[in-house]
Image (cartoon, rainbow, N blue to C red; front, side):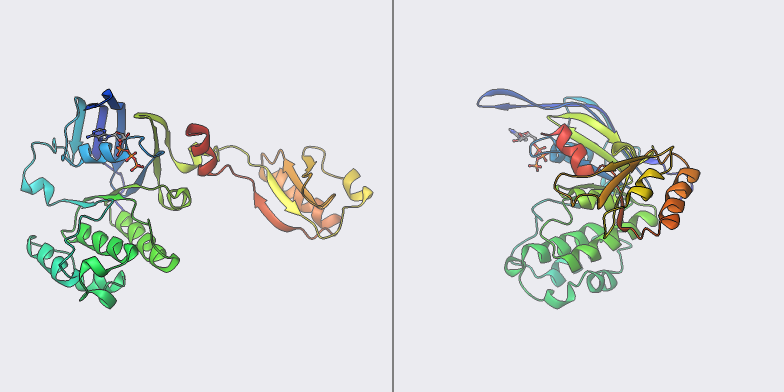
Length: 313
Ligand SMILES: Nc1ncnc2c1ncn2[C@@H]1O[C@H](COP(=O)(O)OP(=O)(O)OP(=O)(O)O)[C@@H](O)[C@H]1O
């Protein structure tokens, strides 16, 4: 990974209005968005938030009414082939020709580049070989997704835009795609993706931009958005209710809260106040001294989904 990530996609103050039968529709109302090399940047938001419009503008396929767009340092709207050959795009609905086979299509796309990717390795990696001779129209949604991803990577891009890359994938294919995305970022690409699967964003993204109604509501790392930078409460369960002696001897600097009412009485707890390694040692020492063998020990992080639901109720 490059030592200092550089900004490869920069959108500042994007505004976009379209005419509709019901009057002017302000789709983007001043969106700022940056994606860096060696990072996965996830653009999230509810349906109609403006994600696809933002990506379309970032790719140079549309123009904002107002704002600045830089892709690899250039305005993509005016850019030529040299810029476009460094950018890979995977569209939401694939945009694949239905009567071509994956083998023929990917061969054709590779022939457009001077130094194409090792497509044989990529198709094997993504499990495309199994169906590469079948017409695209006969492929399942998840198979088309994988072909679209291979097509986006054919030109060894420096920036890749992936619109819902894991939509419709089974768990095995999803893992293949995840591993590939993490490798792309390690190779120094700027990966920009949209997804409605917040677990995916949580696993993959270095930086998250949460859009709602054409406005950036929140942005930052997953840890920042879910408040993981401060002390996190911990949950634990025990097989037997705790005795009065153990409860009376609970470390004074910590706070023990019985969870319920749905949890079994006296068997599930939350501990607050774990602000230092010493506090953690106090908790572990208490477990040891009272022969408590906790099960199901978990940090009670907020999830990205909870943050999303706050922003987009
Ligand atoms: N050319 C257009 N004419 C009219 N409305 C448009 C046009 N393009 C986009 N919109 C509207 O702008 C809003 C934002 O659309 P966009 O596709 O960017 O949202 P999105 O966040 O990608 O949504 P989704 O998650 O459903 O893909 C939507 O309400 C959409 O219907």
